[in-house]
Length: 84
Length: 175
Image 1 (cartoon, helix red, strand yellow):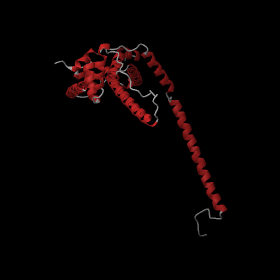
Image 2 (cartoon, helix red, strand yellow):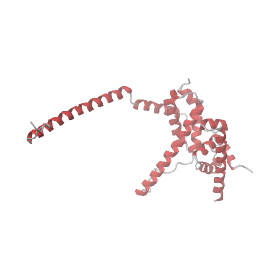
Image 3 (cartoon, chains in turn orange, cyan):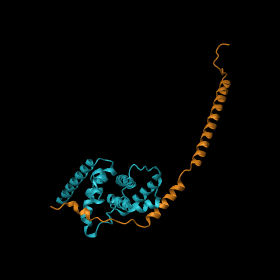
Image 4 (cartoon, chains in turn blue, green):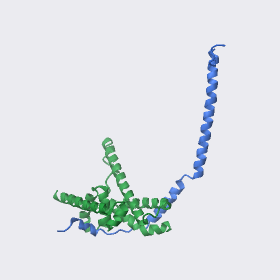
């Protein structure tokens, strides 16, 4: 009895179109251009850290001033000493 | 170490044909071939000669082809859902790719299209074993190396794949 899968033996090999190699080279070129260079990544990370530390610094100094100011305007003690 | 161009010249037809057996569409097979060679270009330095270069390339092509099919199915599902909510009968973006296998002769197109449709419904490992064995004429030992399985497991996969495919073909003919 004939095997129904024998028809698969008749599938022939196809040739890759000649333009495909050029397309691949172009894709490689584009991906290289879009790639993040280590120098850029390092520069970006350093500026981010600098910006973050500056923000923390500003936040900390503002917080102390505001607390003292509020205590003074409300005639409150600005420290925790209850008995003099 | 061979250059990228040497690797391309030696393996491009193998990659393209293997991708064609999975997707049966020229455009999709070209897309997969491009992706496979991009991966080869970007990771050739990481290639360790624990297996042969052609085995490594076969593995990349199989994974890329299966990923491509999965992505297409996902897109199709999304297309179906969006069509449910936005009824636009003129929208042809999500239509099925046509059977466009350049290795199939015109007079056998209908019969082979039907067999490939049944083949596409097999579980991925049975499909891969059958494609490598029946269409790429690889031995069980070579398939075992590519699929990282034992030869016995490959023999069983090919056997089950053939029997399931024959069953599906007979069911389809009975309809």
